[in-house]
Amino acid sequence: FVVTPMGSSSNRPQEIEEGEAGFALLFPKIDGVKIHTFHFSKDSKNRVFDESKFADAGLKNNPDLRVVLLFGYNSWKAGATRFLHQIVNPLNEKSIILAGGQVESFTSLTSENASAQPGDACGVVGLAFSGPQIQSATVLLDQDVADERTAEAAMQRLKAANIPERNTIGFMFACIGRGYRHYKTKRNMEADAFRKFFPNVPLFGFFGHGEIGCDRIVTGNFVLRECNDIKDDLLHGYTTVMTLIHLGSTK
Image 1 (tube, rainbow, N blue to C red):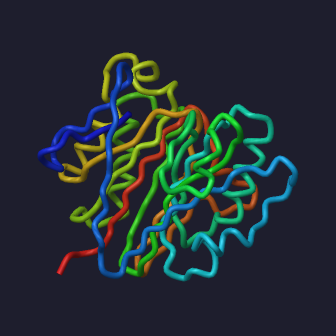
Image 2: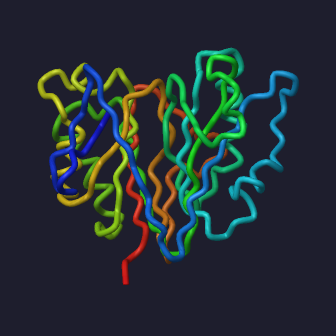
């Protein structure tokens, strides 16, 4: 896990690579912001995903959609990667931030499929953030980012997006092969690099089995998209995706 201890948003975020850890995020009601949850499970009887489910989940025909966090589960099962592509590819629009990773399992108290055990199927769960005042940016730290200098250079790219830091949350989705195993000389490398450039933004996340995202910026009047070629893939391994989500200014 990646957690920022309670008490202050400026506390040092910590990469917990051993032992037990966890965190909870509680979102208040924010004027002009809608947060929807969604869950798509793979239908073993149908190889083609019914894209009408996107609209039902607020992921299509929604001009205010800004950010989608996606988490694939049971990715080791047959057909899981293909199913994840069926979810991610139609959502890969330049005006939407996509970020997330692959996890071992999930537990939901509200899912329509709560009765289905995670071991029975593979699928994708997530959160969709909609609202005209939402601003967001992501950067991809690929395998070449392997020391403090290159990690900080990636954070400089994220900083250059000029996302407001007040009422903003940071997310770090990293491969279990990164962290101390990757950098070797220093622990907490990526979280510390984030804190250097974003001193007051809390950071949360996890080390998983695959990462979702690319370099992209979405603000009210500006969109920058690095992954704009039809061949570009949002799914990665041995990388880290850093994400900022700004929920708007409080009155």
